[in-house]
Amino acid sequence: MIMWPVKRIFKIGFVTTAFGTAAISLKSNDYNLDSIGIFRFGRAALTVFDITLHYQKNLYSKKAQLLDHSSTEYQQLRSEVHKYSAERLLELCRTNKGVYIKVGQHIGALEYLVPTEYVDVMKVLHSQAPCSSIEDVYKVLREDFKRDPTDIFSRIEPEPQGTASLAQVHKAWLKDGRVVAIKVQHPFVEANSLVDMKTMEGLVKIVQWIFPDFRIQWLVDETKKNIPLELNFLKEAENTEKVREMFKSFSWLKIPELYMDLTTKRVLTMEFLEGGQVNDIDYINRNKISTYEVSDKLGHLYSRMIFNEGFVHSDPHPGNILVHKSETGSVDLILLDHGLYATLSDEVRWAYAKLWLSILNRDFKGMKEQCSKLGVGNMYGLFSCMVCGRTWDSIEAGLNKKKYSIKEKEMFQREVPNLVSQILNILASVNCQLLLILKTNDLIRGIEHALQTQARNISFLVMSRCCVNSVYDERMQKCQGRLARWYVAFEQRWILLKLSLYYTYLSLSSLFE
Image 1 (cartoon, rainbow, N blue to C red):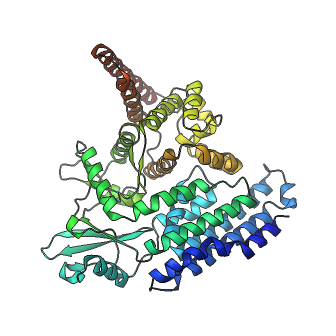
Image 2: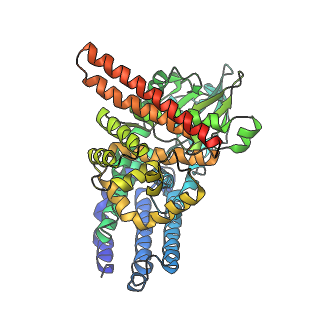
Image 3: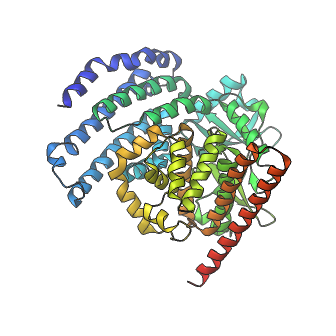
């Protein structure tokens, strides 16, 4: 019944989806066959066709639908189908590279929002993205600088320090001996991005026609909006300077200085800073760095970004956050890769802050009200769980009272496959400004899990303070008259004092449990 439209689409529909833009890729690239649009499109189409048929044959067959969905047999079958499909998707991402890697990384970051099989398979792309050859790196440098790179750099290390979906970073030395990091865009990415996005959009529409519950147009829309921004390193330089100014009071936050005379749309040259990845426990232990100090500073930084500034670094995977022990003994955080930022309007920022306060205070009426403002409606319970990465039982008991455990994480992930349809509906309807925030939340939680510092009372205190400041920022903006502003300021300080006393009490109580 479903097979006929699949065959019909592949026979007469795909040609008009991507051939119109395939010529762009054919004309723009002279590197290899993997960069030619028609090959990339065909590879993607065949992969999606294979995954669709695999789901139809194994999970949506009459035989499978007769099984009890809570039975071990059905859950094992579903897990096997998810894993097979995720591995085929990973293979496609590694072969087509570029935008496909970016989408794969996004999927791998949604730990609490997609089936765990996809997360486990796709998250390898955060640390093992394919890299370009040093010859391709030199080609981009020559094209953008209009000079031979050897006239600028005395040496460029051939092995990259790190490789991402759109670019890779090499350590280099300027002629005067200064050590720099050069971020160089993969040569195929920009020319291929248009045909890749057209292909993805066409394939997603087809899959949604076949499986109406499979609503991931939001992912395509977000990628289409963000990729052009991330491909422009001049925009990344602008973000870097903006966030440096925004957090100049944070002495422990280090952001590399830029060399704007050696920066173009495809090349970003910056100060080289030493440090270990934020989840590198061996490095942290070797350098006697406190994991709690790292976690506290990370939580403080991102709470300020989300609730107070509304300008949020949205790619905090471990390769983009380094830690380093300064000469004074304090721990510095080094924030890298400023290409992708989420910008929140005041209204969304205030509503999101109120939602978090409602979750922490077990204010179910408040949760429903703020979720309605954010576009979620009656799905406030599930969305609240997605936001904090905890079960509804924990929310009801109080997140600051019920300790997070491996058992709770396993239960959360076990229930996610049963809620995929509802989760996709939420992601399709929630205010689009929050889509990157959900991804950021999951990446930060992943780092905290690696550090074994998740759900400490101090993290709730820092977040609560930022939320309170956000809520009172709204009230202050709406105040008229000096007396009203004085009263709001006094009330704000009183609430913050009570918060500090409350969390001090909780911390002391836990010592005697």
